[in-house]
Length: 613
Image (tube, rainbow, N blue to C red; front, top):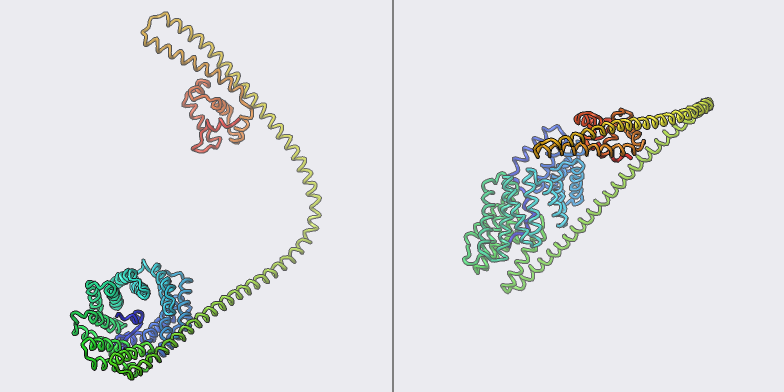
């Protein structure tokens, strides 16, 4: 039987002996610190350490720390203070303050938008929900904390997140997920190199192997569990002065004793006695009644296995004396002891004693249920009060915003009233001026209308002049084409005469073929130019107008001629022959025309000119 009762108690226990030096250091630092924000954090840290020794003092220090942090106006100080104090309020059973500190730390972290502090606050919020028995919500918050801290060096908090998640899955009995998150707990505990975190992580993995052993009865699982628990004890023994949770030693020792008592063949009595007595000695040092009682119950079970009833009874009665002398009545622990005694006497056929302790068991079990009911009611009440406060705060915030809006509205109305008065004054002042200028404006409008008419007439005259110019340019081009045609006709006659003469002369076949090709090429070019002439005659005068508009009147007459030739699908060579220039000159002209038409680098001049009709 693993000590499930302790899964979430381990991390919250402390020892007067191991902490004395730290308390003294903190008290000196608090006295010397002048910054209220830092003083608040130190005070909250001290309060958290005191919570298992003197809860009244711890609670007082926690409230003082919160007041200091609020006075400091330092958000980081407030966040860290609330995180420390959450655990104090949990121990003090002040549920509403625990919830409030959890909420405040998270709200301030979200406002500050610090990833690390936000991760720590989500971890703290998960702790709150876990203690409110909201397991699913707690797990969700632990995962949020992991998401924020995964790339940080907050290895201790990351390991604790995984430890809590492992524990929550252990309560649900989901063994596969227990294994997964216990291994993650070990991984980050080893990165942290923190002895206490390592002890806790190996205790977790040991419990997982023990659960596997209970489920499968495989000896290797039992051996792995023993090895993990022994590793936890070894780390504790090497670093006991640095470990706050001194009861970890007792809990792991009892888990080992449980493992050995589960192995009946052979029954390793020496191991069981060694680990139970070690647990009792450690528990006495730390005044831990729970571990002492559980150790005595294990010793009683051992005595039963040895058929030593008197010793078994003795250990159970010792456990009874411990719980009855304890000033703090733990209903669960008392009911457990009385139930064990009732079962023992029932087995030994002692009905009077069995009935006596069974009644005590029923009494404490009823008290335990009452306590749980009251606790649940207090939790619900605390949740309700917290929600009510949040709603009131939200309502107050909305009210303040509304009041601010009303103030701004009234201010705006006052400003508008002043501006209205000024406007009326100025409008009256300008009204006379307006009437005075009205006649001037009318006269000006008349002049503008006359001027506009004149401008329109001038514009029409300009357009007519442009059209005449275009017609003139077209006629000039036609004349040039006609002159070119006559020249071409003369050239053709000359070429035909040369052709006939060359036919009479004796040349090689290859030379005759070459000359024939040249003559044919020249005659073909002439035919193409005839076609160009016809095409140019069909060009719409609007073509030139649109080009001038596009270029902003930058195109020369020669440029327009080039454009007309390109529009008629003449290639560079044909245009060069038409204008009696070199092809390179044609290419340069094309580049100039493209710039004047403001065409882009990737725009093609030929394609653009073909789009103009």
